Length: 327
Ligand SMILES: [Zn+2]
Ligand SMILES: [Zn+2]
View (cartoon, rainbow, N blue to C red):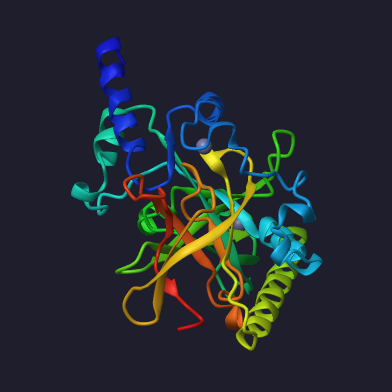
């Protein structure tokens, strides 16, 4: 790429980064993400984000402070993954993509990489019958594909992964918690997306039995704990306002942010959309937004982070619309 082209390419990237969705985009993840993190203008220094290692009971506002809630946050932390996308679907609507198609077209040879966050919601063991074998990239190339694998469902935002084509170019990373601990990745093989809302359910695969057992255990624990909070607040006069987010800001290691929800909008059917003060950055798109006492009924979906509105008086962050347990 010559200098002139590089300049116009950078301006395409800058234009994309100024849109209200919060996926991160860069050309070279090894150098660019850290720079974006260090130069962040939305949350300079990221002081309202905490790594798991630094997160203490005293970081929970005193009104809501309990070991039970701390355990729920730590479990949700484990279930949160980084979502990395290397391709774009031809079906992604051009007029709503903030120039994303143009970026991929202009970057011939070294496509950009996009980052978001996601939450593991389900895991299922699959035993292949007859010629049915593990659909992961490794097994597709292997002469001895695995006959037993685990299907993992990851909830993220549709603007991060638009459809099955983009899902085939997506990798989720579990356990990226610090610069020293990069975690382990599993590939995506499909996606189911909402026709009207901004959510996407990715289908990922692994045949790592130890990882699968850990994930299964944490899903059970999270569903049980969030349902307990839901049940105890349902019958209580207290109306909690806490909104907790775990995400990978700027595609870097995952962190916890805590704030309050301000508005809750009914969005057709039984879906709701929340706006909140909880900190998010580029890279937080698709992250779980746990609304204390509201999410968690029968293991139904936790809310999903979508973007922010810099024009609103309090520069609110907002979720996409998902089914709400309490109407
Ligand atoms: Zn930031
Ligand atoms: Zn496989």
